Length: 461
Image (cartoon, rainbow, N blue to C red; front, side, top):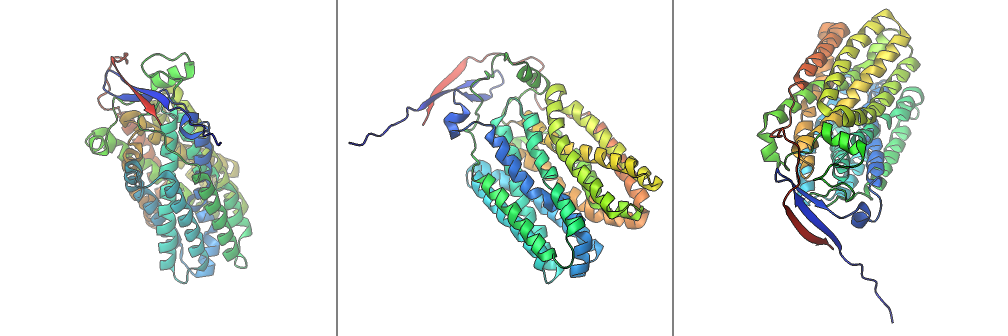
């Protein structure tokens, strides 16, 4: 006789705090998916690395693509702008589909993997630049947007009590995953091998995204880790500090409710400005360095250092924001990002290679740090349940910042030269710091949280 071991259902309870926010507690990460929740930091991190080369290494392939396909520099920069446009455009609709259950996380990642592969194949074999706009700009951009939105928001759902550092770590994969490809495109790829190199990179990145995405799983709505009581003060000083500096949202805002708050659109505009500066630096640091007389290897090194610090900064700044607060950290980051643009300009004009490398790293740090800050801040202000959609609205500012930072950046450089462009970028960064001072969570009461008097007991099958 065969016996069937039927596991008893896991009991959970839903508690409600004084603001009416619900928390589902009692289930552990292993109860829900059979493995620890840190794996939902690891796999999203791998997925983000798989799409990073499309943005951060693309301009390193400019010379080869220009010669191989006879595309002018304007096409190269606008290709990147179109990629960023679609990468940002898909964030909100993908969030809506994800939260409605019509697009499971695993499916979103598989579509992202396919888009990544199509992008590199189109760069390798496009008979006309329009094919590259379609394959790389549109399909790869959409694929990257699906991976980005799914990965970043997944972490916030699994770490609602201390999301800054984890979100920053995963977000960092979007930058330093590109480092080997920067050197590959700048130093190895040429007219004799570019098709094979591009297709191989596409296959590698596609597999990384697909394998990581296979393990994605969402927690239940309102889930809260079993070892952290949301209605009492934790004994873990790290959690106490994180929740004190970044209290949970007073309720789970729907996208419609979030859109009615002025702070969401202030965040949208602040991200528009800072992301535009970041993309401008990615697009123009390499050609600026070459025009200033630095050797190609030095410029590639500067770009790689920028990507490394950009990625590392995302994780570090997330940890810092857990300790000192998201808004205060954002103000400092905006100041650093704006000041670095002046530094890059001055170092290039002086011909100082060490100063150029240093300013490039500082710019990379500031440009990368803004994204995990806004991702975590959106969950702090509007809750985790609809964070994919709510952050999608904030992140949609990159629709414009990508075109402004890359495409319009080329126009500004042609009219005002690099000096005018970098001065403008630096000034916008400093102005963003002033705007960040006014960001405040909507409806947050002054009093601290107190235990609720409502508890609902349930079972998780």
